[in-house]
Structure formats: structure tokens, C-alpha cells
Image 1 (cartoon, rainbow, N blue to C red):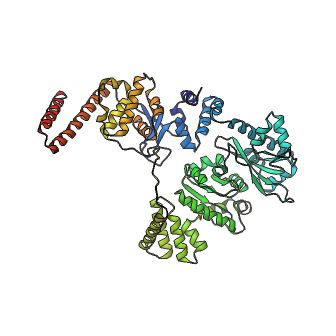
Image 2 (cartoon, rainbow, N blue to C red):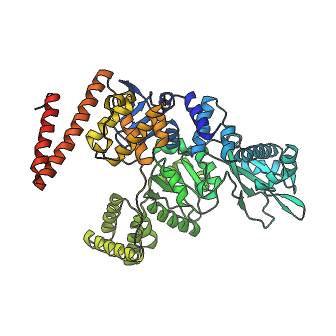
Image 3 (tube, rainbow, N blue to C red):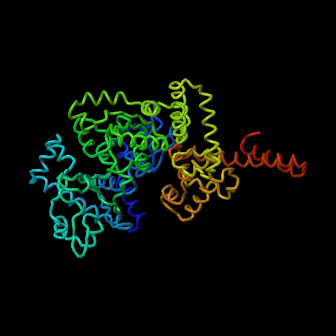
Length: 567
């Protein structure tokens, strides 16, 4: 069974209405279901689910697709993670599907067993338990976040995995064990262990904190990258925080594992952190899919300030809305909560400031230099409204006129364009509305809705369609019809490119007509399209002063109009 067959088998076991109803209140509306779109704010429902075609479409934000696409978009999952999510709901095994393209399953099993191994070790290690107790992490948090301890022995984990039946080469590829001169060494030894889980709650990596302060090894280390783990894409705590981020419509970004755990323990559940590495644009893109709003809650020392500057720059590049909390020099989120309590952190979060205020507060002694640095930052965002907001704020802070600031921005843009001429083209059709000729679109909607209507228009010249996109889709429909396919819509979706799929999803969500009305409608559309072409040729003949052709065309038009009762 190939990958396509397995996906189809999964889709047959689930109903898109049932899945989406878990997240959106849907009400029956004719043959479809409607509700408020989960991807943008609206008061009047424009989100439609079509059960017969198993697709959804929003007429407000133009987002649409099948059930897999919905789960990917709603939960910010990869394709494979969405497949896993849906297969769990449907009770369909996807091991064979995973084996089609990758051996990742063995890594997931190794990391899950290793996590259980570390958890078990923690129970009997007094010093490790005392560490968590000292840091205020209670037993419930230890259990919920699956915290553990890696033994001090040279190859304890290696021997454990060998006893579980894993091959030495596979263990080495997992990066949990290294080898030198024929000996094997556990990567994590004598460390507090923080498991890192993906969106499907699978263990994919670990962070380890040195338990003893008497050695010179790094205080924190992280798993090396593997087929199931990329540091620059992964955020600690996101598997727990995603729902709260979506609910509150903002995330709080901190620097470390303990900051995340303490914040979560105190009820700040929308907190996440990068894995001891610098923040990346990939991190921010993952967050943006859940909410475009981020609060930076970094340590108050110089390293924290520099990290905030870099995060602001990346936020502008990703067109995110960022605010910054400036902590006292010796504080971090963990210490604020432990020493001053939940209300103090709430107060600090309420006082979060904009990037403009942040720069002027910390670097505003030289107003001109600070302003120019900010304008260069503003240019990084493609959101023109966001630029406008920041220009007005800079003008208020500096008493400079907005026109002067815009002139400077124009100068910087021209300077940038000279250095880096842009050749980038927009090829993203997934959320873009493709505007078609209304008549062409309507007849396409009728055929997609009722494929048997093709028999009503035998001999119709598809070149009469003015939209090339419609012609291309129509040609595929004819091929599918000739192949006697029983699943026209799904077969058509499989053959189409992104732009064509976007059109199909949109028109596939339109209202459907009864058979008699549809037959009349398609005949009327064909006549109108034919008349449109005749009128076009009449204009051509008139311009060329071709009286013979003109008279023939006028006669054609008269007969067609009389035939259908339109004079």
C-alpha cells in the first residue's frame, strides 16, 4: 500500500464535520455546516464545512482545505504530526505509512524508553529530588512534565537500550550515546533531565542540567539533532502551551527550562523557551501560526538585553507584534515568581513596552542614532500598518515630524534596493483568493458539484473560457470523466496544483442546486459564454470593417437569442 492509499484509508475512517466540531460550533446550513472561523476574528459566520466533499472553506480569510490541512493549521502541526493526530482519533495504524519515507519510528521508541528510564532513576536519587524541591518544583509538576535524572555511570543508558533489544548502530544514531576507542559513553551523565516533546506529545530530545557544581562541564547541554529533532524549530513547553497561547492570543518567551516550568506552575501557561540556543525565525514562525503577539520576558542582565534585541529584530522580520518586559538586572522570571509572587509578574507583564520604547529607554542617549536604528528595524517588516504605528510612536518620542521620518525611510529603502535588487515572486496560493471571471467560475462550480452535467455540454469548446485556470481545471475534469472515476472531486484535487486547489476548495464550498435547477443553469451559462464570444468577434469585425463576417455574427447571435427566448 502506497502513501496515497494510506491517506485515503485514513480519510475514509474520519468525518471532517466531527473533527472540526471539536473546535468550532457548527450549525446546519442547507447541505453544509457553518460557524465562526477559528483562523480569524469575525462576528458573522463565514466558515463553511462541506460534508459531501470533506472540505472546509472560509469566505472571510479564504483559508480552506481537507481535514488534514485543518488539523495542521489549527494545531500548528507538520503533515506527519497531523496524520498521527488523526490516526489516533480514528484508531488507524500508520506505522506502515511512516515506513514509506522514514525510519523515525525507531527514534521515537528509543527516546520514549529513555525518558521512562530517566524518570525511574529520579525516584531513587535523593540529590536530584532535592534539587527540584529546592527550586520549588513539586511532585505533580515532576510527573506532568516527565522530569528525570541521568545516572553518573559511563554507559548506563547504553546498556539499558541494548537490553531492550536495540542495535548498537541505531543507538549511536540516536545521539544519546557516543563511542571512542571501542567504548560507549552516555551523552547525558549525572544531570537533571528535561524531556522535549513535539506537538504529538512524542519525546524527541532532552535538555540536561549539570547536577554537581564541582565539575567543569557545561551547565546545560541539549540533544544533538536527529531525524526527529531540529533545535532551531523546537520550543520547550510548546506542547503544553499551545492551547493557552491561542486562547490568550499571545505567547510569553523566556530563556530557560526552569523559567518555563516555574511560570507554568504559577499558572502562566502560555510560556515557552528556545532550547538553550539563540532564537530563530523558525521558532517565531511556529508561534505566529498560533498567535502573532509575543511578549519577551528575558533575564535582566546584559545577555538578556542582547537576546531581546535579537528577538525584536527577528520579530520585525516575521511581521510579529512584540512587547518587552524589562526585569531588574539580577532577576529572571523564576526568581521573580519565587521571591515576589504571581501578582508581581502579572504587574510586570502589564507594563510590557513596545520595541520603540525599549530602544529609547536603554539606548536613547543619542536620539538620532537610536531613531535611525529603529527605522532600519521597521524596514524589516512587510506589514505597512505596523510600520505606520511605529513611525507615529517614534515621532511622539522624539518630537520629529512624521514626514521627516518617512523621508528617511524612503531614503533607506532606496539605499537597500540599490544594494539588493529584489527578484522574489509570490508563489503562495494557499490563502490567496484567485479572482476568476464570474461566468467561468459559475459553470465550473456546477460541473464540480454535479459531474454528470458534462454530458449536457458535449462538444463545448473549453477555449471559450476566458480564464486559463478554468480551462486547465476543466481539461482535468474531462480526463477524470473519461476514466470513469467515481470520486471526481478527490481525483481532481489530486491532479491540481496549489492555485487550482485553492479555487476548487472555494467553489466546492458554495451552495449546491437541485438537479433540475442545475441543468437549466448550465445550459444558460453555456449560452451566455457562447454569446460572449460572438460579441467579442462582432467587436473585432467592426474594427476591421469586415461586413460579411459582421453580418454572419449578427445572424448567429439573433438565432441563439431567439432559440433561448432572449431578443
